[in-house]
Structures are given as structure tokens and as C-alpha cells.
Length: 241
Ligand SMILES: C[S@@+](CC[C@H](N)C(=O)[O-])C[C@H]1O[C@@H](n2cnc3c(N)ncnc32)[C@H](O)[C@@H]1O
Image 1 (tube, rainbow, N blue to C red):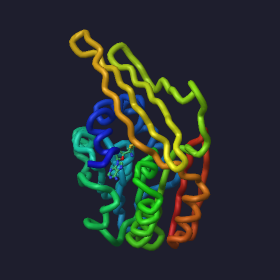
Image 2: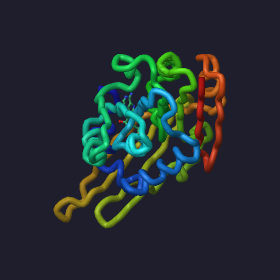
Image 3: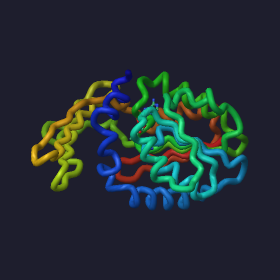
């Protein structure tokens, strides 16, 4: 099993939605995000959510009228997505997002790969391979949206300890260890169970990808229009054919 998959299974998926502030606020945030980028079905209406998690993007896209396929390798998060999607028709696939083309390899209007998912891939080669597959699968006028954090700069010393979120039952802290091409992300979670604090801890790696590297490789894969914005260290890239 990949380190990332194991990390989500053992530590992160149980608290993922809570870590990001809860379900509703993230659905609303992404409804606004997709509105800001004027996204609504114009062609096939098919959207693929790569690394969908518990549905923070899949659900807003389905509400906007897209026919959504949500791919993720974490079963718990996909179950949460199904539970939260109510009457919306969202197809879920549990598997590696790099293999999305086993299900659909043409006529896609929109791909999204959001909130650092791209940085979870094992290598730059895998990222380039994904770009190429996405380009091939998109219909004319189709779009690919990627959002991720700029991890190219390094926090130092105690600044690498990040108090992510806490309440009376859970305390989530993150520690970052920088390597030349990757960051080792340690998640440390204390949860109160039967009046006792129980610790879960594990790490996974994120790629340190500069925005310019991503844009350059999207262009090399054939994308002709690539727009990038950065807000508070968070990068959004919209690439179109
Ligand atoms: C940071 S979360 C983002 C989830 C969602 N897009 C969001 O914005 O909340 C990354 C997700 O990608 C999934 N993931 C990471 N690498 C994957 C891979 N190679 N194949 C399938 N899912 C993957 C994880 O299980 C996790 O749900």
C-alpha cells in the first residue's frame, strides 16, 4: 500500500472534514470558487474529480449540473461523499487517480484536482503522465483546474510545527520536514475516547512543485491557455485546450 493511502486510512480520513472546518463551509466555499471561474456545463457536462476526498468539489459540481465521477483511493472519504451527496448522482470510484482513463478516456469537459492532491503523487514523472492523460481525455474547450500550496520555500526550526485545529475532543498538529524534492508531513492527532487521550501519528510526502514547473509541463502536454493566480501561498491553475 502506498504511504499516502496508508496515512489517510490510519490518521487523516477520520478527521479530514473537521480539519478543514466542516462540511457545509467547504461546500459553500467551492460553490463560490466555481462561480468565480464561471464554471457551468457547456459541452458534454462530464466532470472528473481527481482525489475527491469527502466531496468538497464533487458536490458543488453536481449541484451546478455536471455529471460527476469522483475518484479517490480512500474508502472512508468516499463513503462520506456518498452520504453527503443526498439525491445528487455522483459516481464514485475507489482507486488510483492516475488510472482514471480506465473508466473514461475521452469527452470530458472538466477535470479538477484540488487542495494539494497533485502534490500527493509519488513523483514528478507521475504528475507529467497525469497531465498528458488529462489532455487526451478533455473535449475541445475543456478545462483542468489544479489548486495546491506553494511548498517550495522552507519554514525553519519551531515554525515547522503547525497547530492545525483543536477542540475539546481532538487536537491536530502537523510537523514538516523538508527534503530537496519533497516535504515529509507528519500529522499528530490526539482524540479523547472514553476520557482518555489516544494518539495517532503518521507521515506522508508531498511534492515541492513550483507553479512555473506545473505551468511549463501543462504547456508541454498541449494545454494552450494556462492562467495562474496565487493567494496567501495557495495557487490556482486553470488550463484549457
Ligand atoms: C488533500 S485531499 C483533497 C480532497 C478534496 N479534493 C478536497 O479538496 O477536500 C487529497 C485526496 O486525494 C486522495 N489521493 C491522494 N493521492 C491519490 C491517488 N494517487 N489516487 C487516488 N486518490 C488519491 C486522498 O485520499 C485524499 O482524499
